[in-house]
Image 1 (cartoon, rainbow over the protein chains, first blue to last red):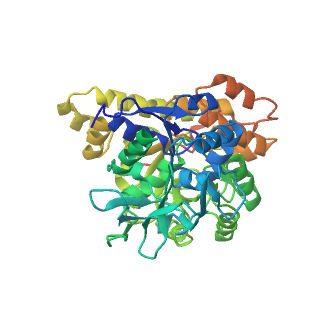
Image 2 (tube, one colour):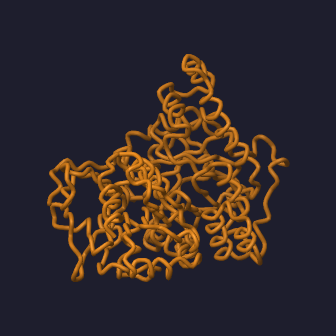
Image 3 (cartoon, rainbow over the protein chains, first blue to last red):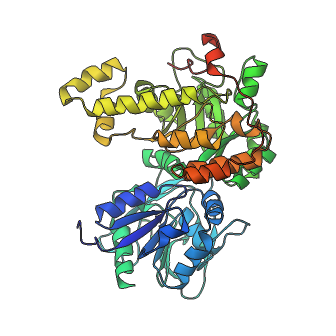
Length: 197
Length: 299
């Protein structure tokens, strides 16, 4: 698989959270990973990953480093973007409380939808369009998508119907952490989205 | 689209995973809901709910115990970020109480008065994850062996003097580098020397780092201190008395958060360090008697 994506430059928002795990996964797939801390780091990227972490922390730092508006512009211009957990929260239009957000994806998200850390869990998920069978998904103080706007496709649900993976054009959101498992299929899926863009 | 059953909770992946989400962040000691809200607004990745910050524990003396459940609940209700709390070393009932309160992480901490001078809490049996302090690789691996899902340096809490945190981080990193250069057959003797379980020593040799997230703690009081610890290789910072014992906690908290993120950018650290007001006054560790050092607690 290595070097098949060597021409792709993927930014990973590196303000706080598990960005290093995403960078490792990208390296495994042979893509170039760029850690994004300042607006200039966004130059020339083909796609952007918003990692897991604390969404309030990342949102605050995004505002203070002047990254919010440039990232919103990238999303509007069709640059593929993928948010995992906190990243999905940041992409959402609303989360039911005041905090800095990108508001680029037409979804309403509920934070900590399962409760505290003691309610965090792993489960096998079927994900629409992802070949190779169930995906072992790690949910850590995870959000869920409570409302999808027009043009947003639910890619995966839990048994109770809660939406945990969504796609809207070139924007992808997962409530779980594919970067914490050894399974590179969703990263490969995002590479393919980026290549088509 | 369904979950195909096989739901599991409280796995090692889940416990260590929350610490991975805190990386690059600052975990702040708070004693009231109001402080917790200030910390969250300043960009804290989590808060540590306490009865008294370490500087006050030091000043007041007496026995330092787990915080009052009312205090923990009040702080849990004030913020959406993870809430941690401390139990005394070896006090497994305090740990059970904190778990029952639904805290997100327990710090089995030398800052509180130890309840057991020989044994730590058997942490693997708990559903809630634990973080523990260390001064070196052996201590870190003993704690991980007991089930800790996150490690921090001990440093010297409540002093505002970063020297012990630096000592502990350098020692830990130095021992990992030394281990990586050892031939395989010398690892068992190394494990014995540092009094650590051999399988964990083998794992560290293979990974080139601890198998869990590793924060700095104990004496961090300025943005430059926070960036220094990141440069020495830690994954994030705990800041205790350094924030709410300073003259302008909200600004200092925000500055320490920004310095932790942009730890390689000296110009930015300079910018955020301007006009922060007075830092906590602090106690130089050199002037402490051995029995006044908290870092010696833990076995």
